[in-house]
Length: 162
Image (cartoon, rainbow, N blue to C red; front, side):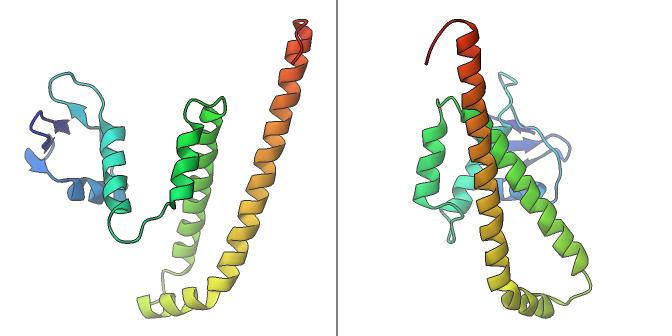
């Protein structure tokens, strides 16, 4: 895809203009794509994806609370920024894998039966997610402690103290 100065997106495969809603549909269909600036050829894919998230968040039922967004912002420029991105990516991928397994196991259920199942499972799912978050927090804390230990050892090897 190409993005033109008039802010319109052009699907080079379909030879037609495309909306953000249609780009969102491509994402939902797991279609790989790249958006490039028509003049500079700069990769704009991330900014388009962020734009879609912004539209979704300002829609009706936001996924992120203000506290979560503020905490994400605080990680920019922080020494842990790279680790946080990787941490979030792995956790979201793990959640997607879980969702795929559940979808596969329930493919024979009608939408009504699926809704009943999910409503019945809600307390259990919340408990599982709470346990997952606690385990994830523990792993993250252990990783942070290990990094501090290694940093201290490395600085000591250079004759520097913390």
